[in-house]
Amino acid sequence: MLRTAARINKIIPFSAVDGPGNRTAVFTQGCNFNCLYCHNPETIRLCENCGCCVDKCPVSALSLADGEVKWNPELCRECDNCIKICDRNSSPRVRLMSAADVIDEIRGYFPFTAGITVSGGECTLWPGFMTELFEEAKRVGKTTFADSNGYVDFSAMPELMEVMDMAMIDLKSANPGEHKILTGKDNASVIENICYLASIGKLFEIRTVVIPGLLDNRGAVELGSRLIAKYPGVRYKLIRYRPFGVRTDLSGPPSDALLNELAALASDKGVSDVIIV
Image (cartoon, rainbow, N blue to C red):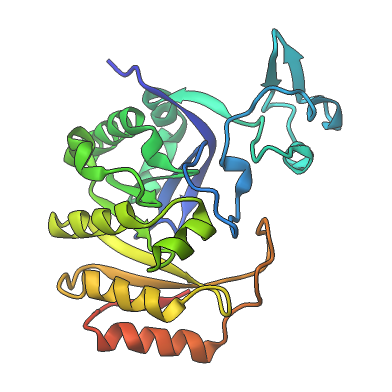
């Protein structure tokens, strides 16, 4: 029986950027990182039901009842006023959904999608939900991917590993201190997860956001390349930092020259598949 539920921030029916092929992306709420450059900080924390957003909704899609903020998706126009007014890195537009609920909602997309990717926030904070969702997805022939910051120990989730096809992991920095400044946590478990997932054939790609002048981008790419070079099936994705929609504008975007230099570095270190986005 499907019992485990998760807080779901949103579901994107069709996505071309959350793994290979046309995929349905499910975004969970809550994150164990607090990244300075987070593009969706409203997914970091769970709603504290303070109610400050209720009166700011222009279509009365929010209400406060029994000490909880209630969201009516039928009235919502997604103007994002509630997210803009929240100073707690949260959103009231979150649903508690079981794996069965999600499958029922996305079933109509199955003929047009290759699989499901669970992202966040941080998806591994909801391992039971992910396991049940992936079990159902596998029954109908869909591939199952996790988009993770790599902090939670994947090796400690054997049931999830049985039904997860691949993971995509962020390597934000090679330096533990720099990583802690950037995210609030060090990078030891991230490195361990990259090595573990690659060794069992379940690592699709690692990603590094390139931010000029703030991070040791070269050091991150050197480390990442060293970790995955002996696994030719693992892709290295270099992501151009874009100062649009982020919580804090930390820098301008990196130059094409810098990105090409880092891509060449990864290739020189033995990575066979490097892309820049």
